[in-house]
Each structure stands twice: as C-alpha cells, then as structure tokens.
Length: 212
Image (cartoon, rainbow, N blue to C red; front, side, top):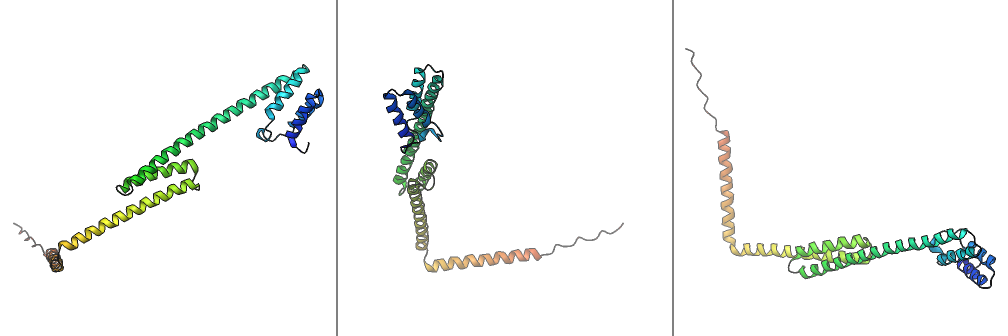
C-alpha cells in the first residue's frame, strides 16, 4: 500500500480513472478495502464503494449490485448512528438544563431555607453524576455546592441550639437554677425511698383454715 495509506491509494485510483485506465483504477479501489479494520478508519469508503460500482457497471458486471448495496448500507448505518448521537446529545442537554435549574434554586434557598436547598442541590448532583460521571469537573462543582449547603445547615442548627441555651440561661438566675436542681434531686430521692419501702413491705399471710 502507498505511503499515503488507503486515502493515498484512493486518490491514485481516481487519477487513473480520469486517465481512462479503468482496470488499474478498479484495482486501486479494491485494494483500499483489503484488511479494513473499521469503516471509520477510511473516510473515503462510501466514495470508494461508489466508484467501484460505477466501474463494474461500465463492464456490465453483476458485482456492481453488491457495491451499490454496500454503499447504501453504509449511509443507512451512518444515519442510525447520527440519529442515536443526536438523541443522546438532546437528552444530555435537557439533563444539564434541569441540573442548572436545581442549582439556581439551591443557591436562592441556601440562606433562608437550607433544607430545601439541600433537596435541590441533591437532585442536581444526581443528574450530573448520571450525565457526566463522578470524576467530571462539572460533577465536582455540583458536589461543592452540596457540601456548602450541608455546611450552612450545620451552622443554622448550631446557631439555633445556642440561642435556646442562651434563652434558658437568661430565664433563670443562678440561685433559681440551683434551687430548682435541689428540689428535683430531693424529690427524686423521696420517690426512690418510697419505691424501696413499697417493695420490701410484706403482705399479711392468710390464716390457715380450721378443719371442721
């Protein structure tokens, strides 16, 4: 095969065909198909099939029909693959749009309603993982947003707990708190002593029956 590979051989066949050397051109075109590993490894494949079919038609060779069908099949397969790629691209675009909407909602809610933001950012992350995988930079950014929402929830809950403790400490003076604790402790001790006495109290034995 020429140094230019299949493409170079195909161009040589085209020049020979223009010069009227049909047999030499046909030999070049057919040689392009030998050992072809994959249709995508030879971009000029459909044109090559077409030229072979034309040369066989000139010779009134029935083999022309085989190459006409091969060319038709090539375009049909290419159309199917293209349709599948377009469908996948449209689905990916739709998923990306949904994820962006969820992320915007999460960013809007993160300060006022962090738990709702967590729901939105979680949905966005799942979509990113499905569309791009776990290692894609877009998925990583979505995970960063999810982590920031978790952090905001933690700060909010910690702040609420601190406010409750502060309010409780302000509602009672130290003396009242000590007195309340003492009363609670004394009451607890009395209840335990009462339970112990009740537990050890013996029931009166019934009198034996006197036989008549």
